Length: 262
Image 1 (cartoon, rainbow, N blue to C red):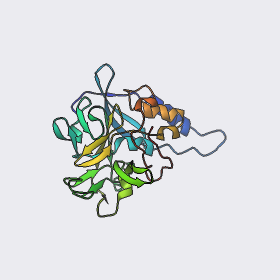
Image 2: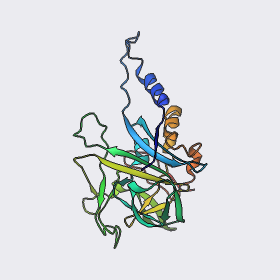
Image 3: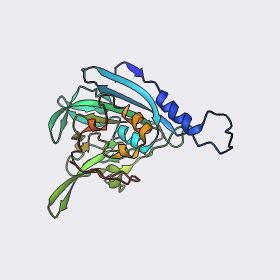
């Protein structure tokens, strides 16, 4: 994004880390110091309420709830907009995206982070991206091989006794080495996520992928961590600013909660 960036102060994170690790001096009770939490760099841009664009880079905890907010689309993924398909890395808050559910919607927030191979020392590992070959889920779904981030959710429909239910399913649940394949890139990969004012289904290379919504994952964080997390979304005042989820969300592997639509 070709916008000025402002580095947000890291006092809240530093305070949290100090409480977790101590000041670095020997503790009088000689209990072992707790391990320092792993962190990574997150970058984002948000369309503020006054119409201004706020871009920033922040160091924050490298834990799933944070990482899931930044890793649905790999660099180069084509997103449908009102001006045709655009690469996800070229999108800027204020652009208008096509949605399956509610027609054109304004992009409010865009975040990104870097996935590093496990072979690179000193970097926090994360599941690799997922390649979805052309026509894996039907003609034109996707139209071309498409690489998604490890925390993308795809819209799937299931037959129920009361009819068909639409559910957002993690792409990781669909990995079968045929229609969805986990990749292990030898070099870093930039991944992204996109947020709208309302939870929606985006069109990504012919696939139906959800826009960002945290569901109840924020409720798993303590007060300090919740503050650090919400600071990554400066356009909202609190967790209610994400609105209600559009469809139920199946939890990511390793997470034990499910989010139901309102």
